[in-house]
Length: 351
Image 1 (tube, rainbow, N blue to C red):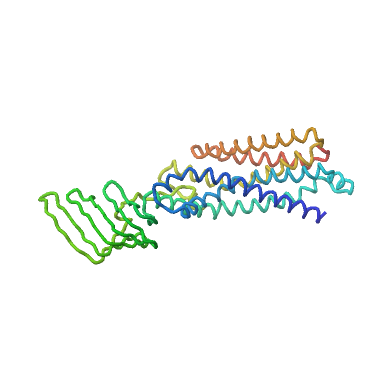
Image 2: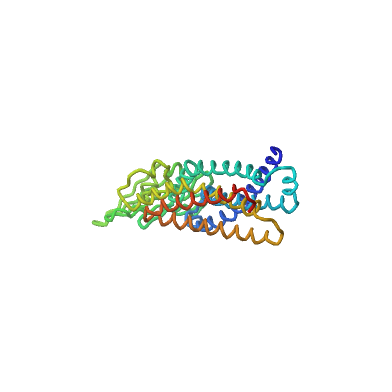
């Protein structure tokens, strides 16, 4: 039995990995396409964009894994039924319920990963994602091509040429943040390092509007801190970027506090869907009366059931962000489903 369990385990593991990677890649393409405007507006490189959107894959994989495992288990168990291997095992005295063991082991493995992701990996990936998004939205990432402009309504930097390694040629800067004067800078070259623009061999022209006085200053080197100059908006931490202990902290904004606590409970309950979908797949494929005519109906019923359960869970989780009452409703839903499925699986009579 140990050898059979090992074979079933690795078959389901391979199928789960392949299906998860395929579905996650498709979902990543859809999600990353929503941020193409940042790539166009910020002047960031494509490799930077890939790094930026790669952080989305953590939550994409976490959302797909429970469904992927259920589909993979259905596929593997269905192959056992179609090839009459399950009948051969029963003739050897091996109950169909014993074939649940490898699925339980894989479910525990994936559930452990999802808890690790929810507690540690996901918050860290969202923090990096939001930081890069904030930097690119506010145009404080170093340019990597000529003609890139750092700008807001009162400040702009233009580089006529780009020499590689963040070395810019023929730089022109206009600064009108002060309503009483306007400043402009010309420089032969400049280098960007840690969002500081170091100008080389240039001049600074300043015009004061009150008396139309103009001053010109030549310089060999001049430093500009682009973060301060651009006066970028402060980055606001989102609940998705918080670790579990941070989600439970008091928030002066009571609406956000409810949303934080709802997300905390969602991180606790969402991995339980792995066990629910797995038990449901095993119940419908291995323990239900087998016939080729009903196999398509049972698989269709499984897909519909997963959609209904996932949809109900997501709706309740979203509602909990506004009313804390729904938090307990999700616990009730998941625990009830687990108890019902276990009771059906371990009934003495064959379903």
